[in-house]
Image: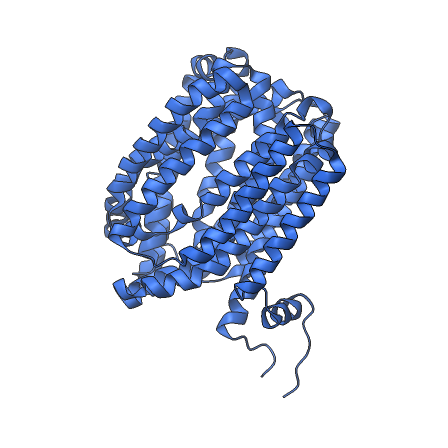
Length: 491
């Protein structure tokens, strides 16, 4: 083999490692800095920040009009550089305009909004700057999507890592040195995102001349606008648990829940990084093979599912150690929350498949999201009233599993992915069984030594399953080893 040449399988494994790198860095740095931040900021500080983000994510999600999905899909239909540029810049300009308009009204009404969402108008500036920081992060996504769709993993990775590093360093400086409080976390992220967005804009203008295409934007909006209700209700579904905890419980409870969610979210972000590898291939198989590609897609996705769930398994099994090491005792209520939400985020793998988007049935996703948000509210209210933040985690998991099952069934009707159900069943049996067992053992006061033994047994069983499914093989091990420790091959 000529040096530098990669087979398709080798390239996918290499891209998996490359795409996981920013996720590892992006999650590791904030989590490793928790021992500093949680000893300076209180549970209430984290609760205020989390509630401000509820508003920021919601409004920015609506302001994007679902164009992130429309842009990604329609990108593959553009054949010429001019058309690709027109789609990118037209989409970006539209979203920037919407971001500015929503930002103006946010600033204008920040005091009543803060009083309504956070419970006090004293946090109006935190609300406004959270909106700004979240919005700039969203704008940058369009450039990163271009890198992902062109399989330029290197650029995507380094810009993401640079933003994470700059953001954490600035936040540490403001919170730990200047002691300006929780707003330092927000300003650090905002400044980092502005820096990276500016650099990306300068780079893109140089190699992709500015061009605007009204028709391309119109086509994307036709596909994306039906997703706006989905985003509207989807953000409520994903963030409303925090709002309800603040409403029915305490702001401190929101803070503990936020810490648990932050750690468990590693599962989701790793899965999203892995999605950057398999998503272009899934689209290509759908467009090239049509309905006959369902079997190919199903076989292709099983190893990615196994890898994604392995991360969830690790986080859920060792949630006690993670939280105990990283945070003071006042935050240890997050231990069970991490384990529960890890199961939820692991189940999101099926919802990441673009069946309805491929079939141009995006309006259905909005209907499914309305069902999901309704279930989330109905289940969460009694759970939170009875068990507080932990109840919110259990309620969100229950609602998520029900709505996720319904969504998967509906998606299969429009494009059937022939999943390898037997293999998937064993993967989730070990995952959910292990996570629930650890929660029960801890609640019943079983000794830590025995719990460690159960964790090791669970991991051993999952590794054995990987070998039985021919995912953990000598060949794949050799490919991974060569990616990490490349060996020169002579001609």
